[in-house]
Length: 165
Image 1 (cartoon, one colour):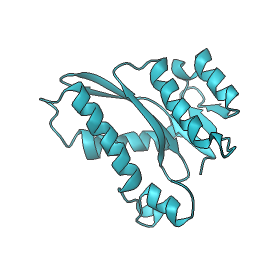
Image 2 (cartoon, rainbow, N blue to C red):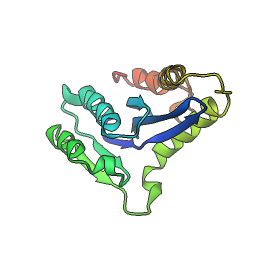
Image 3 (cartoon, rainbow, N blue to C red):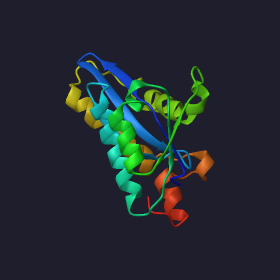
């Protein structure tokens, strides 16, 4: 765990408006290390998520590689300073090479199939949607089983290996 992290932003459009999710995914087991949800895909969205991810490894001294696409959020001086201050290793996809971030895109796909497309969001407020999205990610980490993890959730898998979840 905490060797290679992936990040990106995904947009959700519901009748009440747009919502954006910025997660940090651990390649070890697909656990969502940290995430932020907002109504604008701005620096605050990604910086909040990155700060929470850094907090998870600060005491242990782990220094994961943080991989992203070439989006402006990940080239902004505030993002670069956070990465440098935490002594993390920054990695970016080559232009037009989206497979580099496939595990993050796969998470977005599962989330949208299992939670987003499966429901009618017509009478849902932005706040209700944000709460549902947050609840899904918590469920994904703690409860949703993956065959690649021996039919355990990422948190169960880590606990079985004696790793703090």
